[in-house]
Image (tube, rainbow, N blue to C red; front, side):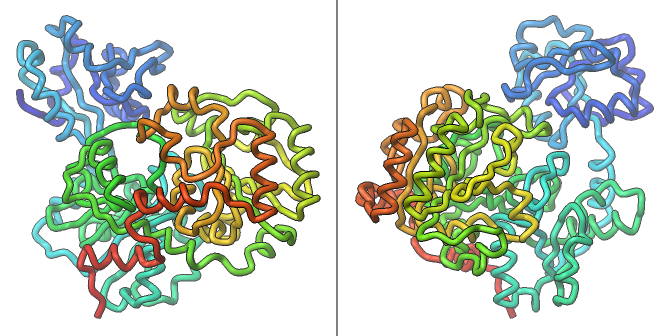
Length: 514
């Protein structure tokens, strides 16, 4: 088989045939049909990702999104395979490995969307020009799933701030890809620091595209948290580092081998190094055990946080970070399931329970701060109006420019479930509790990276409202019954127990300042 780009010249080869698109992307399909008007010819979409499988609406008809078995069970004699993916070369390698396809087709086509077309054009133009002393940063999900605040956050931001504090910008230009560069004018006076919009990858203005692709094509290092597709066609001398969000308990939702998609990723221990090798299909040498950059914030918490966020004074503060189940509209494909009850929270199912918890907290002079996941729909929980229970969402802390680990550094205790935030918080050696009332359902829906999940939970197990009340009382009285288990797990789950992860990352990558 050979691979050919779909063009106006060869589009005629698809007429009077059935099209099977390989890899599902709603935006790719929309642009494909707008460019070549082939919607009526598309019979099926094949995608290995179970979460993408189902039905895609196209011209008022349903098109099936199915798995690889399509190639085994269908007559493909009058079918053309068309790759609809950023990673069309990787996709072609998979298809070429299927013996069954050799009997039906000599050519596999791929569609290049507008962004990829621009990038390939710039890559060709710059291919023989040396890289610059430039480091590129990006955080958050891909552009279509933008959430305010997440484009300048997490591990990428922690590493960026470390580099600024230690004057790496005297040697390197530090460039951020964000949604709206105008929101970051406070950095415009700092030498060698600039912000560009990731939307400029397809800007109608040539000047904006030039700025974007100049940074992308000439960066020596590219650091990102989550989304990495923008760096898919990097040169061999560019170094891409997936900083990721955290090492937690949940397994990966959308499995894909990333061995060729970035050079390195960072983790916190040998235990998680093996897990990431397996889940992401990485080689051992690609996984750097450094600790996560944002864990450094735990040791340097945000000063004046109560005043900034309107948090009342109290003797102690307990943070609760529930893992999202029912997501915002743009993240519907990430939903696990919807919790029953009035609030959509585990353990506390009714407003009456919430009132009881508020009274208990008041008698103990404790404030419970419920910080929602950035993707979580707030509407189900509603607006709380209680003195000792504060609900924070991503928008509120983004407005005040505070990172979650800067807040957790101030917490006297943490309530979590399956979030990586609990693993980060272990470094402070303070009480942790885990809401497990839906653990069996969650294991069936999402699954865990550990076979015996309870053995790996460094804290009290909560199965009922009464259990949560007991944990709150223990925190008030200074009782830390699971301290020994937590400290034993700390030695397994973290190689380093300090605030120097950023330094280890730059040292591992041999990034030197002048």
